Image (cartoon, helix red, strand yellow):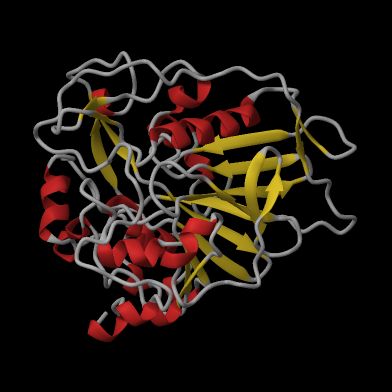
Length: 367
């Protein structure tokens, strides 16, 4: 992508920029540095709830989507920065999962994992990646698609849960796709998001501006930083305990879920894959399934500035999002309107145990 594909101030007509522009008030950050200590506080344990979760009833001629997991690179995470009561020495090499979602003849890819060429990352990003070794980029998302029989040029939509380095992949592989991201994402790429999210850890040219649209703002404060290209035909509505969702195809088969906490514009997907079968793709709502189950909490650690941080931009919001998602895991409490209990499979982007146990779910197979 050339300079013409970059993000410019004119793309945000409602916002006056300054060199110190801050995207939001950061409570805790993600971009760890070498001064982080190894302690964690178990202050975000999962709350229990016996509420029934009600999902939309299927239409008489309901359309379902098919989801296939894609290998899209691996990175190594130090457990102490992610979960409470962690072994301070334990490091786990985990996947950064991508997913192909097929809706009729339409192909949508959710998240792109790692870039196969690390020279495409900025210097500050590469410094962070050095702390996440070993990494692997073979196959990346595009190669996984090819091995499964689909050319990346035949992907219609690329949707990113958020724009951290291990989810943006190589957008230039998807020459015919339109890109869909959460509100404020393009502003974040261009300007960063405050001291813990400096612009240096994002690439303003990451996405093709002429083929990228943002979802409408969820909160009023987001409107000032919204990108000029918005999917204004889409409307946020409450769904199954989630305050904001979008029926992406308009037929009840795929819902975008606003999932605040991890990073500005973070979104998840809730998909209807068959009669009484649903899949929730949680992105980076958490980095370990034990947080969803309540076995572990979200770790806090020294931010190097006299305070505490977590791997989330807003730890309180992230914990609330996780609690809402965790309700989907309680057997017998999730049902469709007027119907009996349904099955919901929850998959987060860095769940290595899920990937190892579900090899048949990877393209050309499916969940």
